[in-house]
Length: 371
Ligand SMILES: [Fe+2]
Image 1 (tube, protein in one colour):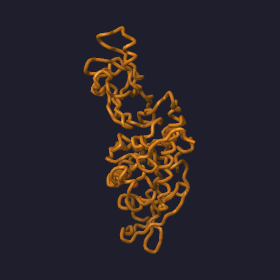
Image 2 (cartoon, rainbow, N blue to C red; image 1 turned 45 degrees about the vertical axis):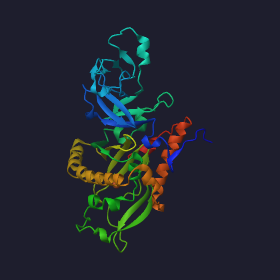
Image 3 (tube, helix red, strand yellow; image 1 turned 90 degrees about the vertical axis):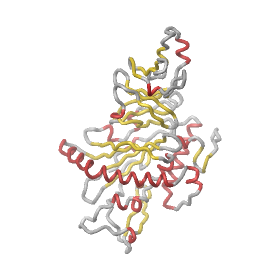
Image 4 (cartoon, rainbow, N blue to C red; image 1 turned 135 degrees about the horizontal axis):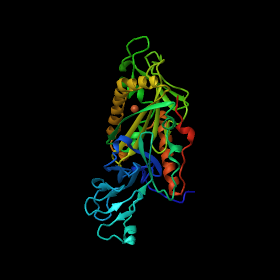
């Protein structure tokens, strides 16, 4: 029995989950987005943060408002590795402790009282990560335990980050949009490649869908009117989980039979209940420098432009569903939506478990490179 009773704002969304699932590591910035000498302000999981690099270049993340007059600390400056409010000069370290009241230098007690919440932050794989949660109640696992396999293995993989996007949709709707059976329709134009023998793709009017169950859940195959399956480079045997808490989806892609498979990883983190930060990278198995150069070229010339179109289509759909409550209150689910329902239930369970003092860990196997 759960100790806690939480109201649902719409079925399967306990109040609070609409602004995020706390107590997980989030890739809040790309490394390049955090300069050495200037703080960055951002909103994530409904909270304003200030993020900066200390004297050693290590990332720090604390609540982004000065407790004195609520000034955004991101307009402040970094001094001695701490963030200093631009207004009256109060200074804070990466643990959120006030380290300087410029007119009351020895008042340690007052400095203690002025502390602001802070989040553990680290840099890995080209991202700045923050553990957005209560580190005392739910001690953060080592970051390396909860990131995709390839980010820990530069020898055998290469990955390319895509510019982070902001979508005007609730994050839970953007996650719904990761179902694996819409792509043959929504992305037919952007993902489709001419068949291997050079023939024209079958037109939309003459396409139908065959729903199949795979090790990666429900998928859809595009067929022609006769039921012949059109080549879309499907995978049926993959490793890892297609969805990993708190908001990571994985999509292995093979543009055409015979071409290198690659993998798209995407985090869809709530900014607030109406906007979502979409952070994405593409990864490949790679060994030598030559291989990496070839893949870089493929990413720049083919995968990135194609991925941008796919992403714009997904954003369009998420934004076209209206707000979270309206969208969920006015839906009719098919059997093929089973994966979406599972995902929603997992998020709900993870959220409610935390109310009872339990944090769902991420199994290492879930983060394996899929192909
Ligand atoms: Fe999509």
